[in-house]
Image (cartoon, rainbow, N blue to C red):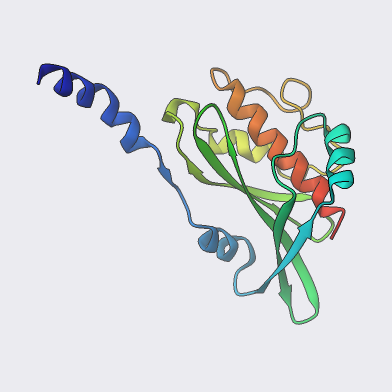
Amino acid sequence: MRRIIVFVLIFIPFLIQAKVFITPAEALKDAFGESIIEKKRIYLSEKEAQIMEKELGFKIKHRFYSFYVAKDKNNIKGYALLNTDVVRTKEMSIMVVLKPDYTIQRLYLISFYEPIEYKPPERWLNLFKNKNRKDQLIPGIDIPVISGATLTSRTVSEMVRLTLKLAKLL
């Protein structure tokens, strides 16, 4: 019985801290207001995925993606991609919002299930604003590494770089 109580006291705080911060629908509304949102699907062939992996320098885990395209009548207001990946052993979801010229408008941390001390701070996520395909976006080169959360830094960077690469296919 004592072991169970000790276990609960040690691990429950970590379980409580892992959470959803904003829903994808709320993030889209915040980013694009009352715009009409359409989905555009991208399917990478095996060859396209291999080429992209070589260019990006990391393994792509999926070959099917859905972009959200925000429109006002006939004008495109921007794009967004919701991407989920594993940081260490648990998932994190990020929505990358792009301006019509494919410059990063904002990153939304949708959910984070790792211990909260590895969560990327909002200030760090804001460093991606106004970056584009020309930027390397590699932690330690042109984006600082989050002290004590190197895997989180790398995972977010890979998600953003993949989004920018996929956006070329739109």
